[in-house]
Image (cartoon, rainbow, N blue to C red; front, side, top):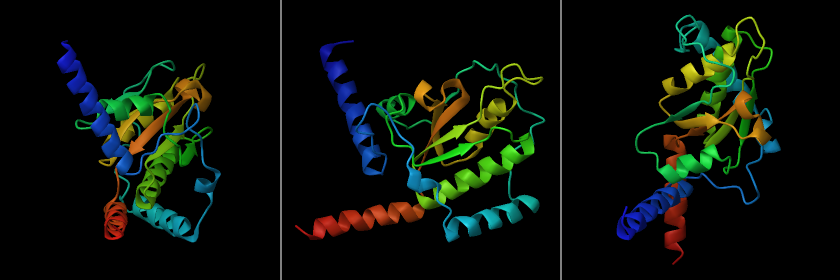
Amino acid sequence: MSVEESTNKSQTDTEGFASMLDDGVVPHSGKGAHISSTATKQTPGMVERRKAAQQDDQSGGNQLDAGTTIKQLDPFDVLSFVRPGVQHGVYKNLRLGKYDIHSSLDLHGRTVDQARQDVWRFLEDGFAQGIRCCLITHGKGQGREEPAKIKSCVNHWLPQFTYVLAYHTAQKMHGGLGATYVLLSKSAASKQKTARQHQHRANKY
């Protein structure tokens, strides 16, 4: 690769990364991402959305597979997925755990059906709230009768959410092979809020 091509690629990654930051994905200023304690509080809105999600699930609203057609993974497999259009720099920072984690879900001890409902509600809630980066802890399932059962399900389910832009196995400090970072796109409401903020700043000058 020539110096000019290398420079152009670097500039493209930087611009794409800056664009994603402008959409609300902010790198952590320390050595890695952290889980915000405020994100796990049960607000009245979250409770109502969970009730609605439970009703949707009972009536067929939850479209995630029940677990019968899922490809079985090895406990030590690395999960990796990125949609076309997501910049290399953005995905790299997700993989390295450089984004703040604003919401987390622990699936330890859950059955496949419970995990299916939990993942659905968790991501629907997160997307509605404008969460950009979250963490799902599923465990490795090493030594179990069905190794990596929940991990395999999570890997199968995540691409079914159109607003999941990318995901990757977490860094060791966040659970390693037993956890996964998930990057979400912005909801329409969040985009409108960002646009209003930009307009407000523009009007000040």
